[in-house]
Length: 235
Image (cartoon, rainbow, N blue to C red; front, side, top):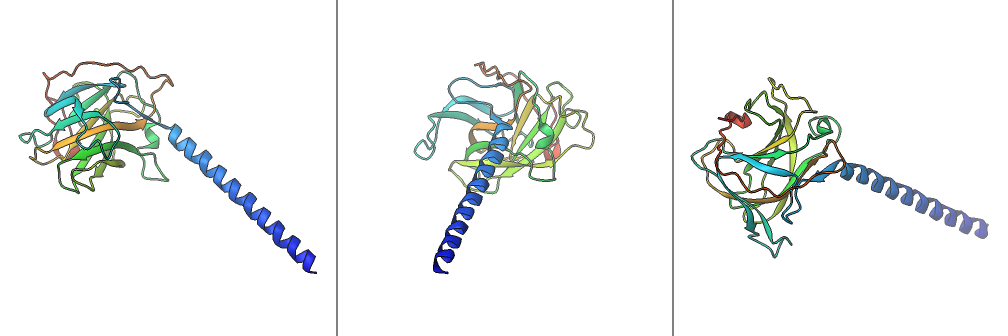
């Protein structure tokens, strides 16, 4: 009887180990699928999958990392918010359309999330908003497909912001297959002039697996004036 008992316990251990391995492999597979549906739009090596477009604040595309000891990146983007613009913003224009945007723009299930590395002088709890839309002069709400929001948790320190889907504008005329622009709003609906350092914006994949990256000088001749409560528009 003792021998049978030992064999039974040993079998149980083997079965438990097999189940653990299966669960672990399943986790890796699911994680791989999730990661495979997102991509970074810049690598901070002088190349990026977008060009900066209209903006109303001060932008430096080769700023020194304010805290290189806590984040192993030498350079990043620096944006000083224009305090005279209530809905100050900066636009990122893609050369290709994004795909699978609907997997991010949903309240159901476990949607994908846009993310971004951020360091700011603004107080914790500051709202940061991302709008996915199409390039052109139409602006908000027609040119915006979906809106995503996140709040900072630290001041003068790097963090990985995860943006949660907030809304699709009621009067949106932009489908998920037309998105080729990302608009960043730092602390919208305010007159603050804090500084924001950012890089490694990650989001929906491009329609092609191959992403063309270019290095383009910043155009400082245009300004953007978004509307109320994330309702951005260009003038």
